[in-house]
Length: 275
Ligand SMILES: *[C@@H]1O[C@H](CO)[C@@H](O)[C@H](O)[C@H]1NC(C)=O
Ligand SMILES: *[C@@H]1O[C@H](CO)[C@@H](O)[C@H](O)[C@H]1NC(C)=O
Image (cartoon, rainbow, N blue to C red; front, side):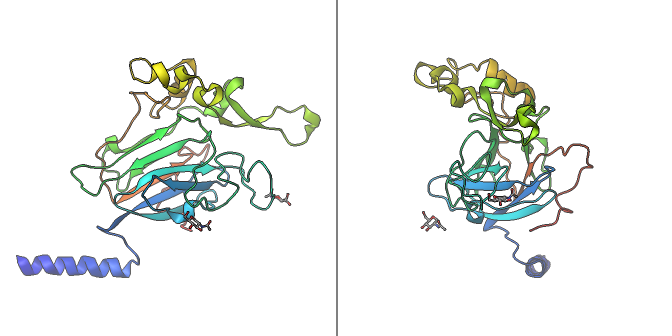
């Protein structure tokens, strides 16, 4: 059987060569997809000791996906920035949400909250597995779904939201931009929703001080609003009901911003053009 085994390996190697820079055992791939009906500027920041991926940020038009290669043991975060204009020289940053020092390439900097965060912790050892989650601990700007490719079982998928948090965000948590024109009669647009921790900075909301244990930090009316809209996400720091996709070893992960594109047919990442 040995000759057939090596021929098979040779064929795999040849296919990998023909397909271009396919990363097999030495790394993994994130497919970052934008199904929002508007452009987003995805961003990524590594945890200490891990490399910056894709310069830390890039432009992604609606319907497009980008392949981001990473080491098999990468740890860090992804988020999406919205409403960016890098030529405007605005003192408040270039993006309405998720801004990183006004730059397109965040180069390792984390973004300004509030922004929905995909937190990734990969292990090379398939038996140990990898884990990831979606966190609203610092607030929300967009819905995001995470899965593996091929979809390796439902426990590896983290679903998007049942409601748009920005639409149900109470005034005290809202991040708004003024409506353009209309003589101030039109309501401001809610572009993000702060967590109660971010908005009020209280230990009870942030699970700090005497609230620094799961037993003492039980969530709030605000975290329950997040939970109701996005049941799979962390709604506060000690949210034990969040999906964490533990042990989901894969070579390819799919991070989809706005997974349910309103009114449009579902479009596979395979068919989305890659940039
Ligand atoms: C970005 O800002 C510049 C300078 O203010 C402006 O001229 C341009 O129209 C803006 N671009 C967009 C897409 O809003
Ligand atoms: C990116 O960050 C690295 C490490 O901090 C730094 O050496 C490099 O100059 C930065 N690049 C840009 C374009 O800012």
